[in-house]
Image (cartoon, rainbow, N blue to C red; front, side, top):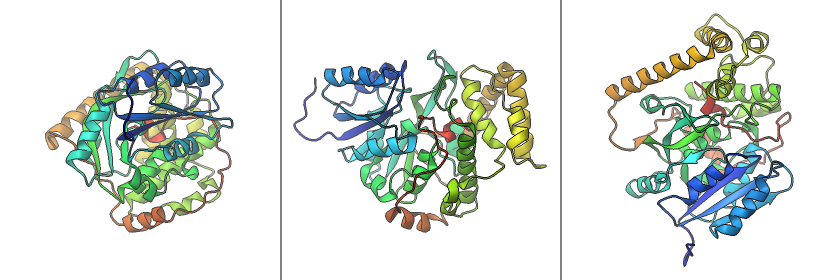
Length: 373
């Protein structure tokens, strides 16, 4: 095994909670990277499915693995914070425990830092796979050609400078289920973000994801808060004031049910959110409501044709984007933050003490943004 004469250049960090049966695939994809000078910091967040024992076996086999075991479940946001703070290297790469990194991922992301030293965050596009490792949809290169407050890459695909993470204030408990969207938003005010326009990462959809088993009200409120925060950013406003009382509302954005249904749809299941949409969504005579009604009804009645339509739509968007903006190398992500940058940066430089969020579940979950259409 590789022994280090000096501290590793990169810390790969991965929180784990009940990640079987995909855990071995995720670990192997990091240990098999073409770039080898890294430590692999893994936090087991009180798993109960055998993940803890399997991680101990991996740690005994490879000295680059540093295993941290939590006895009490922290949940997605705070487990991400805990493992990120344990990183020793100046560059930190995120990994999720049921996904897969291509062998060249770390090397290529580090190469962008070397060529663009002013960059604070580097990521890549991802393909999407199901529980059987089958590709169910391709990468979303079209997102790189538009200005949007929604981050165009998966949480597990990003690499960042530890200095920028610290200045941004790390993950925030109030942003459970979309903690990566919030973190990247704040880091974008401090340094440029570059995205490799190739899929070097595989994001997994699984019908047994703990996200789908989480408390429905808490999850819907969390995704609604993400969309309301994104709307604020689109208007060049900050969103910290939405965190009061968990930011919950009686009715939620109709897009919430597209986001939640996507996890099941791309896992090969039949999402049944139409009645839930009618009961809980903030319906109005606008395109958001129309799109959500059509999507949830279509997904419930004929998910196969909806998947085919969405794949065709993705292809058309990617082709249109490639004609509009030919891409030869890393792309600077143009976050929609210019007028709120100073306020968000000031908040990041002086993070406040966070109170626990009522109603959140301790189960780990996938990023809400990654599930949005």
